[in-house]
Image (cartoon, rainbow, N blue to C red; front, side, top):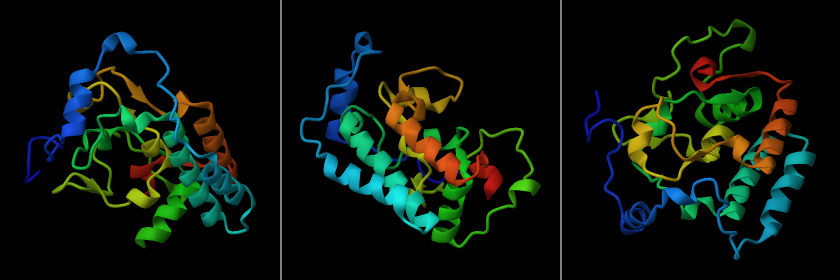
Length: 201
């Protein structure tokens, strides 16, 4: 099924990723990441204001997702993550998506979302995301990817991502109270309607 590589990692580790893997120390697990001293809060504030005040709900949704990216930058998490372009092990885990996130993806891709009231629940969600380019292990909706994807980082080793049942050091929406606030705003915009991405599309 996959033409390149084994599983869903088709890239070679660059120097920075190799350095992170080499320097990983499990004794640091559970400690706070060092603060990003270069973070400038103006962009975060701007995205949040638009996410709260724009009249167009899709524009509000997009700005809330961009605010989540700024929170990641503030956390400095990408400096320690081993996530990289061409690695898609995580693209088979369940991904909760609010109605407004699904609407944004639909707007961007032209794919029609399933009616929430008629959604057939998938019993096995550990299949690859419908928006994954399986030949290149790349996200085809990266600019409008859901909050759950934006907040997911692997901080120890990508080899643990191969099996969704293996516990390892990751971040999720619940790893930061600001991400949780973004999630609550998206839920409010969506009237609490949430489904897995494989159920919406």
